[in-house]
Image 1 (tube, helix red, strand yellow):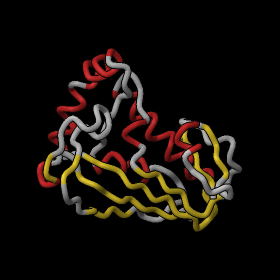
Image 2 (cartoon, rainbow, N blue to C red):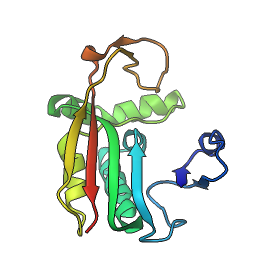
Image 3 (cartoon, rainbow, N blue to C red):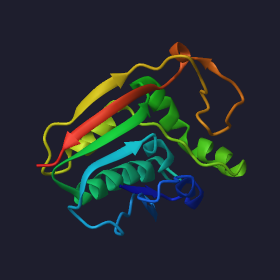
Image 4 (cartoon, rainbow, N blue to C red):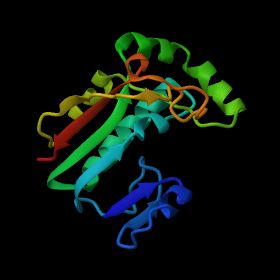
Length: 174
């Protein structure tokens, strides 16, 4: 089992000594041998890997998916759990990207950028040697933090008011 994260602190919290911990950015998985992994899980991470503008966020998404497929064995599976936005909310977020980035930079907190379903599917589908990507909705329940960790714990809302949807994307490498 391999865990990859840019945060040494996050990896240190993993107590199982059988887990190989790699401090790296998911856009560059060069520390992992190509065609050596059976399953790659990307769990609630894509919205954290972006850049100073919208184009850099799309490039980051593309790079993560490409890197993941390089590491997968033939028959290996990429599974992504991610929060996504509707097309309307995505457009609003995209329009305010630069100002949001600057505000969060001022507060010394990381930019968070959510994709819409079709952008993730398009990026997965543009990778060669795959079977068709599937997507499933995962129902959220209870009280959730709409600021999703950017400013944690300020408010909680019922899940039905949450502006994001939870999705599972899955694809197998041919």
